[in-house]
Length: 233
Image 1 (cartoon, one colour):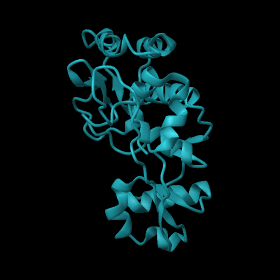
Image 2 (cartoon, helix red, strand yellow; image 1 turned 180 degrees about the vertical axis):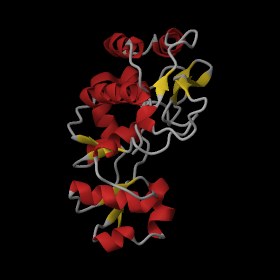
Image 3 (cartoon, rainbow, N blue to C red; image 1 turned 180 degrees about the horizontal axis):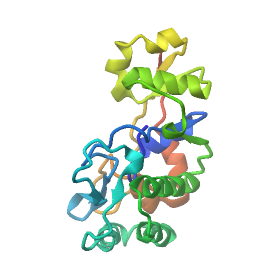
Image 4 (cartoon, rainbow, N blue to C red; image 1 turned 60 degrees about the vertical axis):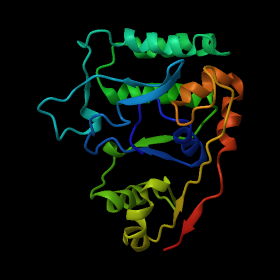
């Protein structure tokens, strides 16, 4: 999976569910994607939080090379203010806010490093102990299914668990069959939890789950995990 900024709960659940999680960090950066932004819930509804990056003249840059634009006015102060406004009255705001704000305020140059620091923070608070790896540190090649199969071979995987969004092109590809690696699709049903600001709003950053549910967040996250469908080679 590409390293996501403030990922949603299902992303963290997938990480918890596998034996090893690989960050796909050597592929091309997609501006205005989940790699640099995500949503939180506020009194006015969902709000985007976006990390400003340096992208002019760098259309082909890899995710690992993307630099945060620290010269952008109001970053990260404005982002911290939005989180404070959205979750200041949440039950566990005081338990997590200071640490999250400290990470956002650190002088981190690369977007990848910020995303990983936040993901590691969420891993710790959700009691996820899955080891992680980075595709940029592997001797792998290809695109789409070919690349994923090559990563699986590099890791010595006997099963590949994929997000369902990749099903169409994986089912049409032969690379996993040729590698002898079954493909399973991760099935996740978004759980509900008590939120501030009215009715439940799904698909927010996992920050929403932590701020509202605290020590129960890991248990609630795992409630959404369903059995996978499997495609054997």
